[in-house]
Length: 305
Image 1 (cartoon, one colour):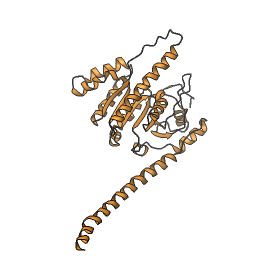
Image 2 (spheres, helix red, strand yellow):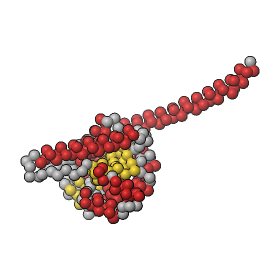
Image 3 (spheres, helix red, strand yellow):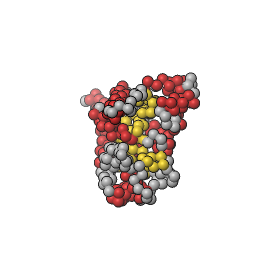
Image 4 (tube, helix red, strand yellow):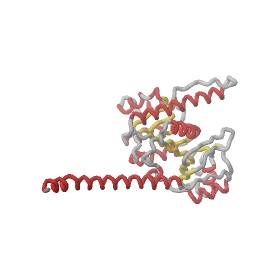
């Protein structure tokens, strides 16, 4: 009997205590995830395509940007959509790189450079490639202002994040051919498939990897769909505003509501794009407006308001 009591107090009771702690911890995690999911599901969506209605919804439901509230642990890839010429949109990510790193993001992935040039990052980290030389590679291959892209790389490396170049090598499209538009679409299909394949392989090879991807806004909907088809949880944020941007219902409604100088986030329905002959149809989870500059260059401006 004494032996049984000793066994009971030395083994069974500690086991039951640890079991209780485990069950309680599991309940906390589950209830927190459930609460987060319910909160996300109930988040207001601005879906009207009528400016006055959308502006009213924006004014009522736009909220401050808090990545920690937006992203849960299941989000493996956060896709940012950008206007390539916009500096302020990339500055948004630079300014909040620490916040993203704190949330567990380990990789910064770029549309802007081909994966065949990945060795440039190896050389840059080793100190055998100067910052000026890296900038020149961006300028030659990408064509847009390289400085904000290199600044993003520097900010990510400071947070011990990896840099991954996503794009394919440039395919020359003969614009004199009658089917040039079809050829260009086919090239973009190949490009996007390459990006998704690279990101999917990263996620499969490293269960702890979480990726911040920067691509053009025109690709956001397609990339998020393909990630979903690969069973990779993602969220997307289309960046708007700054000193250069394509006008969307979001940016126009912000001006209509006198919110153009605010940094704000809104969840939207599909099909918010720029209002010109090359309309972009996006399927973003969110739009994040960085403040619109007073003298911004607005492409496809929807109204003079």
